[in-house]
Image (cartoon, rainbow, N blue to C red; front, side, top):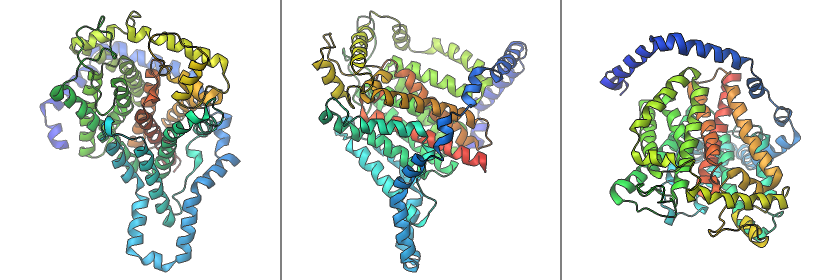
Length: 509
């Protein structure tokens, strides 16, 4: 396959264009001097010093009593099973069935790589959020079974970082602290899915090969969802829904696809979390079929994202990809910028028209957010430390009881991820969440200085950029309004943390 690609006309055309650019006057007289100037300024900048500096809490976490205690508690089932294995001795070692089960347990990443695309197959009307909980719980059990024979398969809370653990604690504590505990209880299940995903993915991944398998699974899930979105537009057809778009300012826009999700914005948010991983797979896979899966997923997902007409997601993906190029190869930033500008005239007219409405505050899809922001800010003023309580139901009731919202459309959520997390989990929760995102970025930047495999580094960068792109999108929407998008978010975060773990192990080897 590689030989066929390298002998193709398109490959030679790309090589010719690259050589022309490398030898051009623009490159030698403008771009290269500018790159050297920026590199000198960046190396001595305060920002790079901040990104490379590890805080006191992060440094102390791995050796802290809390970290050791949490690791011991989460590893207890595997430790007990390993003790039983040692007591049984020879019969266990000679059992073919037992060894087959143990082999399966030690390859939990393979199960996880198939789990994600399977979860993406369910249409919204047949989806139940308990599916993802059961699936990741079973994956954790498989991991524990693998740890029965392999004493190295244990949970190390140091790999999660202090801020992710603190956020999980804030989520759990905000159920009893909620103003309406009965309404908050069921939302703990949605967050538990994310906790299970992080625990089992980060703990089971030991090397770059397993990390790449997980990325293939994410790309397959992206391809499945994207293909269904394209099928929905081309074959089934999508009617224009006036509740999704202001037809006064978007008169020619077709129906917005939503694939296996209920809402085009939710579908777009899931896509922007997975698209950078497909790019990483395309760039770093050592196998031709891995690159082919990455390319197919990128094409299907990118086309479907355009068909969602989700403006915030477009902006979020653009921000994430700019960061990706900067971290992966800063020299390509000018070239990518020129390609982006050159691609604008080739975009469909409906996409360009939709982009032009981003700054139009007369558009009801934009103006309707301001009463939501006002009500949420007022709720935070009333309960800034404790918040209203975990889950959208508690927040809605808190705002309704205190008569904080005054608009015709119903209050669903804050339409801003940071404000919604704050009003649900309180001050500790939002500090921990933002801290976890910043901790991830700093750790990823530190990985660039390590000697680790290209696949692990590229996947880690892609995961971090996906999270940051989703946070930019989250400035205009609440990412976790749909639990399946929340599951995708934490699966992406888990792959990123697993990548950081692999990179640091390879760099310190």
